[in-house]
Structures are given as structure tokens and as C-alpha cells.
Amino acid sequence: MPIISTTREASGTPTKSAMEQFGRDLRGQLLRPGETGYDTARTIWNAMVDKRPAMIARCAGVADVIRSVNFARNHGLLLSVRGGGHNVAGNAVCDGGLMIDLSLMRAIRVDAPRRTARAEGGCTWRDLDRETAAFGLATTGGIIPATGIGGLTLGGGLGWLMRKHGLSCDNLLSADVVLANGELVAASPTENSDLFWGLRGGGGNFGIVTSFQYRLHPVDQVLGGMLVHPLERAHDVLRHLREFTKTAPDELVCMAVLLTGPDGAKILAVVTCYCGPVEQGERVLRPLRQFGPPAADQIATIPYVQLQGLLEAGFPPGLQNYWKSSFLRDLADEAIAVAIEAFRHVPSPSSAIAFEQLGGAMSRVGENDSAFGHRSAPFNFLVVSSWPDPADNSKHIGWTRSLAEAMQPFSAGGVYVNYLGHEADEGRDRIRAAYGAAKYERLLALKKKYDPGNLFRINQNIRL
Image (cartoon, rainbow, N blue to C red; front, top):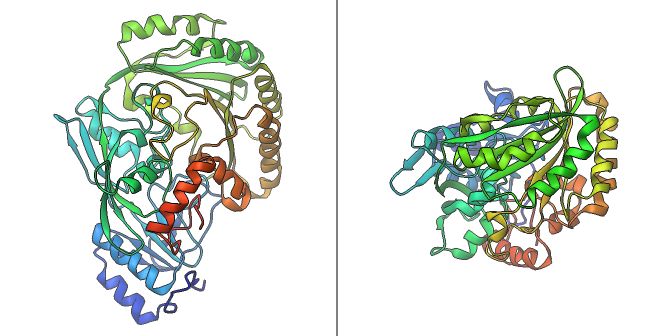
């Protein structure tokens, strides 16, 4: 695979001796095609993405990241950055360029008295949650513990604690960032505050974050789990859930998921997390648990880290994945009917349709306080299509696109950037829709300042 030159100021593709010297300069490891570990390093969660970088720099520390950024810039290489490798668009990997792999950089330090944690950019939420749980603390992560902290936080960070404690990016206190010129800078409310604004929702457009500092909160046991209803009751349950969530306290997050059970039956699962006193949670959840009643009630007092892994088995690595998503104005009756009817004809038992409850603390952050947008939407809609055989791609992609189009009349006009697919499929307008016109213009100004050559382009790209 030839190396691809992508920058006008490139001095030319690297020679063999330059690549060998680059490898010797790394404290980590430089992998080339055919070498042991190369295929493992380039393999990510979404099996639909099968790209072959010319080089993979497995960085052991910040100095390796700086060397790698400088090498890519000086030689005009296409550059991608891998944190957790869980993003559906597959932006962690590139064809024919340099992939910077942060997965060896997973150090974490918890400062329990100050309720903060600093974690390196290769950490997953499983890594961070396990460390903070030892102190009875947590911050908002995703819903799958294999997700990297970097991608999730930079794109916003929906999670089980968001209504009580805000998004992942709302809990970011500071970040260390390697810029396109190879400089390491700090970003916080008092240092490079414009960059700090852009990192909280603007994705990996401005640099490589090698370290994240988070605010932590007392979270140990939660009241959470799953209520299971047959598909025939889904319309009634979702209407009830809509009304129930209108008065739900911030401590509660609900997600309704249309999925196929282990026995092959189509069901509606309502997954809950109540992160307040259990006695209060029992009272709050009683109307939801009694409605129907459900065919199964699996809600219990469990450790937060256990709740974080509750849905992981439903999102296994190695499958073809294709997603569509949009924020909703409301969980309207017509939207419910469209989703249920589509799910009756879902072509894969691994595919699911989710409605994520938003609001609470995340909606009370000022709309202009971070790059993340659309904080006022009450729900997010997500189609997660997955299947094993690439030969069936057109069938499953077609079903997903058809449903997404049918749901557009109920859209609030925006989309969660972390759920976007590849730009070639989504289109430029969808990236703009993730931020809105005013924020997108502000992000363009940041891009011009911090990455005018668009070195960091394999992402949901803010393009000059």
C-alpha cells in the first residue's frame, strides 16, 4: 500500500531509512504491514472498517506522540488517531498513512480528596471506572465500557450519569494536547480557553489529547437494570415512558431499546440507572416498574461499574456495523409507531433501535459554553444495525437508511457527533447539523488557528 501525501507543504514521502530512524526514536513500537502485531493493532470494533496503514506508531508516552505528529506533518502523511477504537465511523484507522495508536497510554491517577482523576488518552471507560470505583467515585462515561475516554469525551459524552452530573465533556477540567505543529499545550478554563471550548464537543479536529482531567462525583451503588416487555406492548410502554420522564428527577436516566431477546422474540427493554439514594429511587421507579406489568423486572441495587457493562454483550466486536441517529423534538406517538413497525421487519437479530432520555443537568449547561450542541432535545434516537456477513451489507444498510429517513419528520434538526458514520456516507451537512451554524463558524476559526493544514482530518472534520 503506497503512502499517501496529503499536505501541500510536504517535503515528500519518507525514505526507508527515515522510517527506520523514526521507529528507533520511538519508546513504543513502529509496526509495518506483515509484522507481528500489525493486524491486531489495525483491527477495531466495527468489522466493516478494514484499513491498512503504512505504519502504526504504538506510542508509549507523550514524546512518542510528538515525534509521530512531526513525522506525519513533515512527510505529508495521512494521519489517524486510535484511542479506544470503538467509534462506528472507524476514524481510528487510515489507508496508507500513519496511525497513531494511544492504546498503550493508559495510566490513571485518582485524587480522591479533590474528587478528580487524570487519565491518559488510550484509556477506556472500563479502565477509568475501575480505578475511580475503588474510591466510590465516578464521572459520566458511555454505555459500553470498551469505549475509549478520548473519542467519547471529545464528542460530548452521553452516559448513565449525564442527567445528574452532565456530559463527559462537562466534567472535563483540563486536557494536555499535542497540536499539529508538535507543541504540547494545556487546555483549561484558564489556559488556551478557546481550545478548551472546542475540545468539549468538537472531536479530534484540533490535536491529540494525551491526558484528560475529570471532575468526579460520589457514585457507588445505583438502582438499575432492565424491564422487559413483549413487542406487542411496546407502543403503550413507550407512551407511558414519555410521560413518566417529563417529571423524572435528574438522578434517573432511562433508555428504551427495541431488540431481539436470546430466545429470538422481539422485545422492548427499558434500561434504567438511578444514581441517588436507593430508597428514593425505589419510589421514583415504582410507576415505571408497575406499568404493564413487565414480563421481567431485573432492576436491582448494583455497583455502577456493573451497570456500565450491562449492554456490552449486545455490542460485540467483529460484526458489520452501520448506525443512524438524530435528536428528537419529542417521543411522539407517530415516531413510536414508525420505529415499532420498522423493527417488526428488522433483518438482523443483532440490530436494535434505542431512545435515549436526555435533559437534566446536561440541558442546563449554557448552549454556548462548549462546542457540544442541541442540549435542549428531550430524547435521542439511534439505530444500531449489526450483522456478521459482509455479503449482506446492502440489505442491512438499506433497512437502516429507510428507517432513518422515516424518522426525519420527528427530528429536532441535529445529530450527536459520536453517532455519525463516515463523512462519505453522512455528507458534510450532517457534520454542520451536529453543531448548528453559529458554533460551526466558531469551530472553523479554531481549526484555522490550531490546525490550518488540516493534519487532523480523519474525524468528523471541521474543514476550512
